[in-house]
Length: 351
Image (cartoon, rainbow, N blue to C red; front, side, top):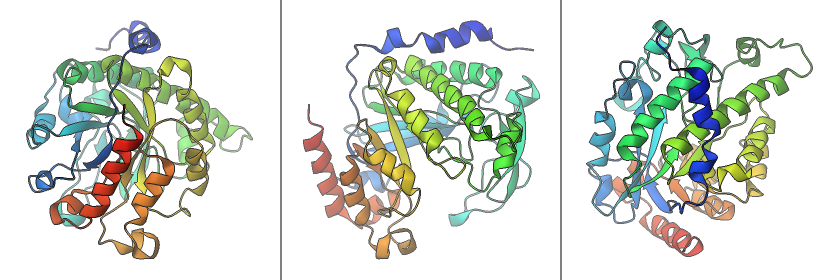
C-alpha cells in the first residue's frame, strides 16, 4: 500500500508548535466575496475573495498536484485585493447526481477517490442532499497522513504569498469545510466510529475522536502555512454545542499561538438557529470569521427579511471578516452596509 510513514507524518503535526510560535500573523478584516467573479471585483467594498478548491482537484493522483483551480480564481482579483483559501475535504464518491440551483452540477468527488480505491481509507455510507455518498473517517490515520501531505504541497506553493491571509481547515463532513452532517442520523455517525449508539457516553466517545482529528488537521494546516491565520468552521453536532465547545477550548491552548480562529458559515442575523453555539461564540475571545447564509434576495433567511441584520450580528460578535455572496458585490445591493463593516473592522483591528 503506497502510504507515507504514518508515525513520522503525524509527528510533523504534533511538533508544529515550534514552527508557529512567535511569528507575526496578519489576519484578514472586512468583506470578502464568498465567490470571486469578474463583476464582483469591480466593487470597491470588496477587500478580497474566498478561493475554493476540492482536494480531488488539487491532487488528482497520489502525490501529483494541480493548482489550476486555485490559480484561475486568484487571477481574477485586482492586485490590491487579498484572498483566503478553503480546500474542501468530504466524500470520495457520489452515486447519483441531482441538479443544484443556478444550473450548476455537483462534483462527483470532493476528496480524491484514490484515497479509498488505492490506499483503502475507511469510509461510511451517508446521504448528502438526497445523494448517497461515501465519507472517509476523519480520524483514520491514512486520511490524516494524506491530508498532511496535500496541505504541505499547497503550502509550498502559496504560503509565501503576502495576499493570502487565511486558510480554512479541511473537514470530512457534508461539504468538506463546514463542520456539520445535516440530515445524517446520529446512529450512522456513531456506528461509523465503532460506537454503540445505545451507550450512555456514545456522543462523548465520538467527540474524543472528532476533536483529535480536528486538532491533527489544524496542526497540519499550521505547519504547512506557518505565517498564516487559520480558521476551523463549527456547527452543532448531535444537535448540541458540546463538541464545538471542546474544539473551541482546544484552540485556546498556547500551542495554537492565537492563530486559529472559528468560522461561522451560517450567519443570518437570526439567533434561533444553533442558538447554543451562538451563545458559546458570543463569549469567545478569539478570532471569528463568517460567511453569510444566503443572498439578500432570499428574504426568508433573514429576520423579517432584513439583510442588514447580518452586519449587526457580525459586529456584535466582533467578527474580523465576513463573506457575503458575490451577488451583493455584483449588484451593489448593500454597498453602504459593506463600507460600514469594512470601517468597523479596520478600526477595531488596527495594529
